[in-house]
Length: 161
Image 1 (cartoon, rainbow, N blue to C red):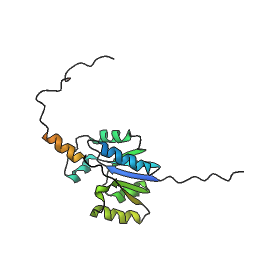
Image 2: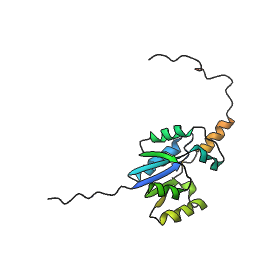
Image 3: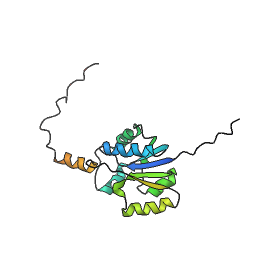
Image 4: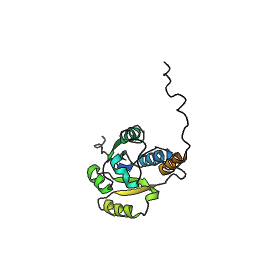
C-alpha cells in the first residue's frame, strides 16, 4: 500500500518589464525564467510609471499586457503598478525574482537583494541578449526616414476570404 501523496510546493517566479517594442531578448528572458519555476507571473509596467526611464512607450499598456499574456512561458500577466520589487513581493509572495543580468550589482538591485533575501526570495540574473534592446530599436526608429507616402495598402478595401 502506498503512503499518502505528498504535494510538492510550487515555485512561483516573478519577472517584470515595460516590454515596449517586444523583441527576442524579452522572449528569451521570459522563457529562461519559466524554465526555472513552476508558475511565472510577469508584471507589465503601466504607462504612468514608464517615465522612470525618461521615455514614452510606443505600445499602450493594454496591448503590451495582452502580448505578454499570450506567451506560452507566462502563467499570469499583471499590471506592475509599483516599481518597488519588495512592494510587488508583498502583493504576490513569489519565491524567486528574475531580471536581466544588465541589472547585476546596480545600487537598486543590491538593495532589493538584501530586502528579498530577508523573506527567503532569491534574485536570479538571466543573460541579457546582446545586440538588441528596446532603446536601440527606438533609436533606429527615430533615425529612420519618414515615409513620403502612405503605406501601399492604406485605404484599400480588405479582400474577402
